[in-house]
Length: 300
Image 1 (spheres, rainbow, N blue to C red):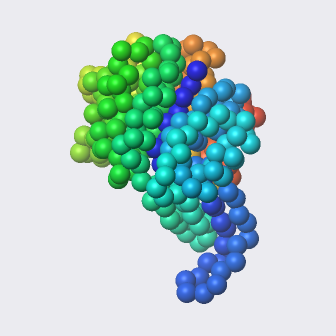
Image 2: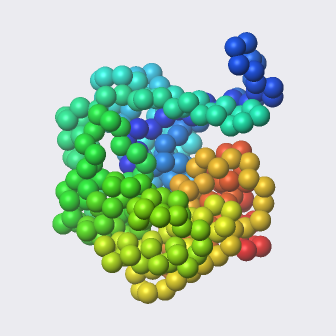
């Protein structure tokens, strides 16, 4: 079974304003509302690909209720912990002459809420996959990812971590199954700028030396790199297409990789699935569908 954790999920309200102007009333030409957050995105894309998962995390208030309802409407199991203080955030994404985002704060997560999450995680079984994705709210310990992996270290889980900076680096001693920085985030870790695939491979191997088993690095329009625990390196250019929406592309890559790995049992094929799924989301108004992914795979 696959479980995703999103500590600060959201309702993503995407509005299109054809001629946005400051200081006056603007009217939208299109609106979309759907569940958001990195782990939630992974669960939604997995569902689109025909793979079941359970979405874990925290939700609060009327927005949290709507978030849960929308996920269940899509056939996704949402096992959120409902917290007392605050409301789940609404993230506004304005598409106009320039794309602008306004992200909400989210609810206040108490210590007792975190303990309730641990109890849910205690129910995971050997062989399960756990995806930890996204940032940590200010109300939670900055060591949260590391704390979870330490708590679960006696279980034989395949844990995927999609995070940045210390959130990612601190979990490496616990040997995550997969980490997925992009090349910019990889450069941040090593205080450098990474622009080519040779450098990506070199620094990805440095993260393996620190404990990561498999390192998948996205490079936007430049493609991607995978360095595997069995010593293989895979590189590819990005599929050709028009980028419509970059939100969720990295999460889609994680979902596609997991789907490919579970169905094919092969890292190279999982890599191809991941790249095509990430690209399919980037080329679409919403997250990738199975048809869109396989259309790219056929040409890739």
